[in-house]
Picture 1: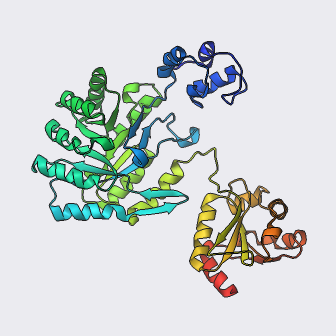
Picture 2 (picture 1 turned 180 degrees about the vertical axis):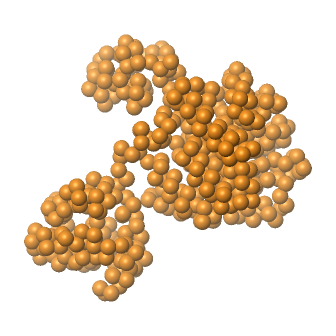
Picture 3 (picture 1 turned 60 degrees about the vertical axis):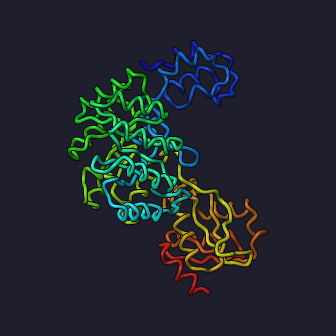
Length: 448
């Protein structure tokens, strides 16, 4: 049962030092009880007090780490069912599946296609983070180990889909230092698989034929002392997989059932084998409800562009706007004599506009105003992107002292600001740019 703020306050040092960022120890204790801050933010809590509270104040979902170095990812740690309640904290990771049952040419083609999807969107790298390496009883253990070696060469987190303890042990011998996931603890082999995972120090994926069997299997592994696990959603139907993902998350967060509180793997490659379109649709569903890792047969740009875009929108803090730093951004070698364009600091607006400006090849200066992280029309309606705010921003940033060109293009959606800006910024020629960013290329080339 979670501790209340008053219970935590009784264990606090009661110094009111403000070093934690809260005005009093009572305020800090209330934030800890709500899950808003970690108990570690206070440097004066005794170790005994921390130990007494650690289990009670931990997130209802266990936080699991997989991989190492730059490829280390955090899974789980969620505290809410819906993003708008607070925020989701650990984004869904995507894996592409390969199998030792494939021939060498198919394996090589599959692995070669994985690095093909790799791009940046709003300062975030979008790529396939994991590889699901499946063991087939029809192929030898030696072939499986060789496949694991090949997959490890791509520097992705590996998920070893293997229910044979001996084959799993052989595969881990060549990749355990990269902290892969060993996925294959069933009711029939969980003791042996637990021993293999514990010896290698890796996360263990738990499998069950249905939710009851899955729950019992997790509980049995917990009795063995293992709390470093992932739960596999059932794969006999989409309905059962969805039920597993939702019911286990709900039981963990709403009912405080910590046995259900582990991150999940959803294998849509099995749920919709051979159907790339259905797999893409299911991947989007389980990104929202509630796959920590989603396994697919392939990940090309057709799947990645909408899927990663949705993930990026979903796994942002709704209480914090996505914004870039206001200032002058030279594009295509723009200098003090280059034409100026201005827009808001909403991150998506910046990246869309800057991308089109780069595509034009025209040297220019993109001046980003402080608009509270809102879009053009929203910030204009809220008074954060007005003639007064733009003129004030130019004055505060001393734009006129940094740029000699006196041509300023404003977004076409706020063309109404043209007259007001000309009055408040004498000497500047205000030009109304197109309404849509995609039209900027032709617009700038025509101006030249």
